[in-house]
Picture 1 (spheres, rainbow, N blue to C red):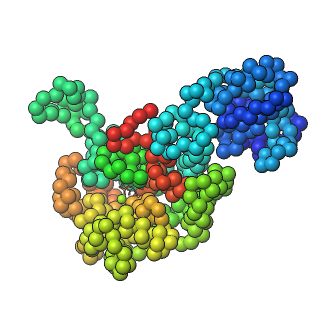
Picture 2: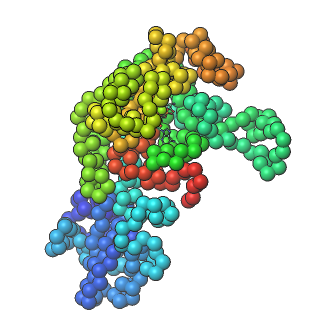
Picture 3: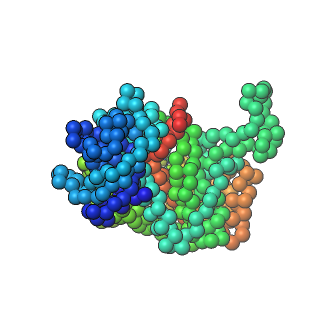
Length: 457
Ligand code: 4AD
Ligand code: MG
């Protein structure tokens, strides 16, 4: 069996070969018919020619509607028609499964992404979702390659955890207690783990443990947030990439993040050319320009305080007013990246009051060594920081944030025994795929989106 992507690249006219896939369209004529067949290996379909002298021509054609699955053996030839280089003249054909044109939901016409979400089991067969999934695959591969080439160890951080890394209280509980029988106060010592457990919001704390032994590590896995934000950039289950580097400060952290994003874009442009051209033509005409921009220009680097000043003198009316000490909203982030700098912006040194307890306190005692990377159309795509490696200061910060030392005793131990300056960041993988493809809604860049009120498929 040959894959269509490979045939289009390397197929030679005259060779006999077998392909299998699903019918996208059928064009019936008296003497012969055309089938457009796709096997998911690339955006392009392979054109199959069925001649009427093929056994059971009429019966076969009736069974071969959009969505039907088949296997064809035939002779490859150069196509006389425009926009098509190679076609396959069928010599034999097997229909695996039919798809009744009366009720198969994916007919030839274009469907809205909202509609496609209601048929999450069939939407992978569309051009757009197909292209998204191939880009996702290439980007994931590029991420592993980037870190592996630099000697980072891939860490499988746990999915079930007892600690709230971000301290934002947006965690899903994990329990084996029979919820329907619970009355009164819950005794978690009777629960599966003998205490409260959650789905992780981040693998960072565990990555820090491992960085204190292997120097450079990264996690790449699913994370979960029970935040009730029904936006085009939030999922309840999303994938995060979290590198953590010992002997590294906030500057090294920014450098790594910048070259990391550039490498991923290069790899996608190189390996997903056809899909990227499709996005540029059909989804967002700035997608290729954005990729070139990210690869070829240095990111802007400003402090939070500078960002606030720039926003205040922008003469723009924002829905949420800007004020030092208050977190930047998506509209502010987008203004900076999209309108002002017109490229990714790294914002550092946020007020300590709006960032997590583990970020390193700066000498001004007011700000922490945080860094967020903001990009056009999305806003924040990366959040990271240098970590607080000084035991006494970390203890104070935990106290101020109501985080009991008894819960994170092991995290404090890392500062007790052989502590070192270290830093890391988290990249939201789906937001990255949105940035690459121009897809407006995050629900359309993950195979099976989980959002408030929706865990279908
Ligand atoms: O900024 P966040 O919350 O940072 C952390 O979790 C740190 N522990 C990372 C670290 O330093 N190791 O999340 C990191 C990124 C965000 O910048 C965003 O891209 C993405 O994760 N993200 C989400 N993506 C989709 N849906 C959500 N609900 C997301 N929340 C965060
Ligand atoms: Mg963040």
